[in-house]
Length: 408
Image 1 (spheres, rainbow, N blue to C red):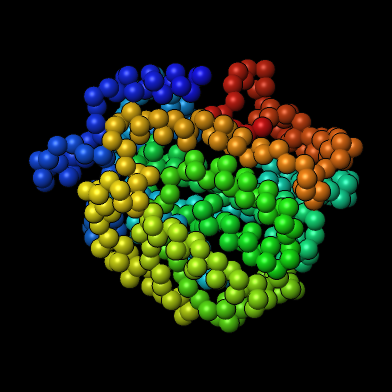
Image 2: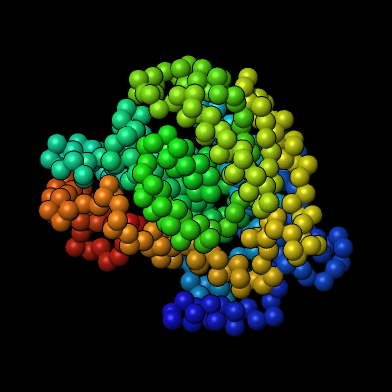
């Protein structure tokens, strides 16, 4: 009911206001159309310097953006040609990290690194919760990418992949929050939209049960529709033999000892990427694919990106490309900004899918109590971050509120 009231109030405040496409209107003097960031992304070389924001960024990390803020602080006014979401995809060890960092630097965008389970297992004070494993029952112990590489058939493999999807989903919301509040574009390594290729590959290789796959798909179906799809996906392509050479060359100990990255696993991953994910996402986003076997030059990719006219699909309302980013009213942009801001916990609650028919995803009551007793008595875990005197926090008696995006 609160959400309905909020949406109604935002639209009442913005009644009659159409999101301005000032760059387009200045050239065509046309009537306002559904707002979409005008045209081509530009790099530093083309601009001749760093990006100059149209408006100062909103301090969303320390200040909520609410219905009342929509009266004075509109959303689309901060958007420019570089206010885009770019996802970098590719097989394991394809050079995504180096490329994504260079791309974000050249385009003056915010870089979001690949997620890992450290986000769960290392708390706000830097304490590694994996140290608690000897005190925990087997069903409650940590299981991260190292564990998966060494023991991919473990019962906790299903939980691992669901957590990876959850972390990618959470990070993508953070990226949308950033772009809506600052106007600065974002570059991400992988995304929740492509996460299913790893789940499906694990299932085909026998690492996940049919029941766990069903739970994952139900969670994905319940959550993925809440996100706006990226504007651009860049896929760095390597053949399987080159991927295996790259894995060997980077010499990560648990990857070297792993039986996971077999030719069959990597071929399944490649097939799912190309035959399902890339085929589907190309209906919604621009897609660039590069042979990255011998690496490549980021500058060449930037030049290709600068040639893409992201506005070309606006004239056809039935074209699916960029449809997620076509909001005719300023109020809709403000609603989305609120949704991906302080309403993020509501979106994360969609992961609570009640399924009790998959044993490897369940814990007994005794195991859960054991976990809580150990976990929430670890250093820095007894109270919210900032309120743990044993970790050096001070001024506890005068603190009156928690951070805007602070998790428990």
